[in-house]
Image (cartoon, rainbow, N blue to C red; front, top):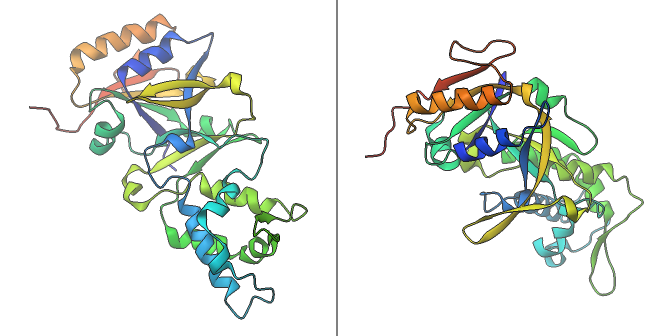
Length: 285
């Protein structure tokens, strides 16, 4: 794992984060997983599991066949994504091992005018609890298939259909298998996103709608929750390749000083935040 993990965002978002600093805390936005930019998000694992279940159901290993090819649709399986009815679908804070990636700048860094904020990954990992954890994204479908196949008997055994062909699960079955699946669902991405080298801080939130906030982008209200973390976790800020570095670094220096932080341009030092320019030779002309 890289020593630092980077969060690409706009300068305006960084400004808002610093404006909202309270004591030694700042907040990051964790976005609802259904509202991320991968159109296959949250369905890939279902598709893989469905194929494996059908394959097992039709194999000689299966002694209790359930005719899954005709009965098991992705729509019917969708409840597996939200197996724990007490929790909302996961909220995600996206981080990357890539500190200075041109496609990341253009996709997430305000068209290369933004920043990538480097957090100490050890600090982020220490935030893990029962409902929040750091996990590297999985892009290797074969690896995921192997993991799911190891538990395919338990998945298959848990499924039942009533007389109305309703798909459900046996509730007294060990729910760990579904927790395992939920973790795969929230970290599996299409391999076309592999260049992102993404890590996700995954936050599971109880159904408390008062905690929800919304960011309207292109007419779509995207739900998010605010997640506090120590401001000391920030170790570096990289300024995007299309920003005016000389002007931005001056403003950023003052913004950090205003909230009691110590900026530097000399490299990463304990107790300081390093400010540096992107090395990508990119400009808009």
